[in-house]
Image 1 (cartoon, each protein chain N blue to C red):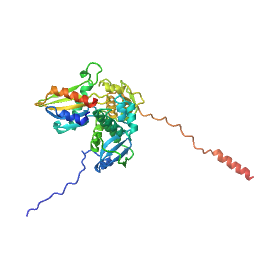
Image 2 (cartoon, one colour):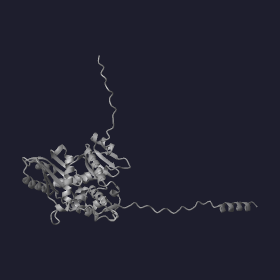
Image 3 (spheres, chains in turn green, orange):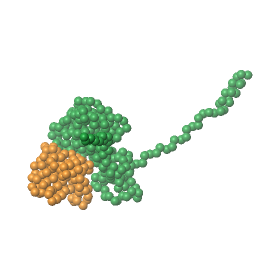
Image 4 (tube, each protein chain N blue to C red):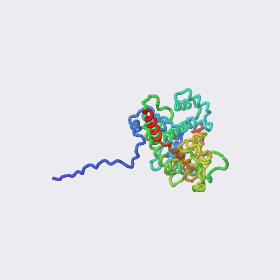
Length: 270
Length: 127
């Protein structure tokens, strides 16, 4: 009789190559094809049947800014659409229906804004996200994106920024022009798009503030800022170290008071 | 007025078309894809094509005289069996996208494809 030796099954090994989910909650919501609104620290994702239909972030200019900044759409036309509808996505759908803008331009701008805000919404956060089941978001005429696709693209964008210049400080700090004597300025020519960014570096604006000012996607601006930082043209404003506080007043343990009290008590006892 | 998918499907009707995509050259993201991609992977193709497009768009040597937009119209790559045609899309809003058409060399007509892709790029954003 032949005894077949069956080796014990190998222990499961966590696949280190697989990227970690950006938000376990989001993964679960995608699996259950949830519909609702996921509010995270740096942005909000609107899900319909597990797909991202719209994203917003205070750090990324919205569709309204992208469309009106360069006169593609009159600000009044956006205002009219926005007041007639429940939110920016519905306003964009109304614009699509009314034919004010070519479908291709609107779809392109919508996807640009979605991936841009999604990048910040999925940024590491210090507080847990909150999901509200809500039937309002729905897959409409404008393109939507599978959750997995947004997560993968966000990870790819993080890696891309890291490869351009590994210091993330330039993404959020006010920017200053770097001292050319210190940095290796002049090695890489400044492109016209980078020049527009560089012209707005004033020691106050951050990269995302510059993006809003330019009516440009925030991630595009981060790419230019990291390239400019790598070439030594800009640097994050070093955080202000607060002046050391004056030493606190010494605690009041005046021995004279105790002495005076003893004297008073002694005098009263006479 | 065509949307992104209609535009890409129209590009696929050109003789010899193997695949088409709308790609953002700053991020390397494919915003839409149809048909095949070299190596079967649209994502990798988009990232590589974006790198090429960025070089062409950002290096002054290739820019047209004057301040016209975009600085470059097309990038054309040919190899033994196919053509790659990248057509920059000139949008009135701030963006950095191009249409990428992959054409088989046997059936493809590069001159025709170049003219048609330019028309499609205009119609996509101008209606």
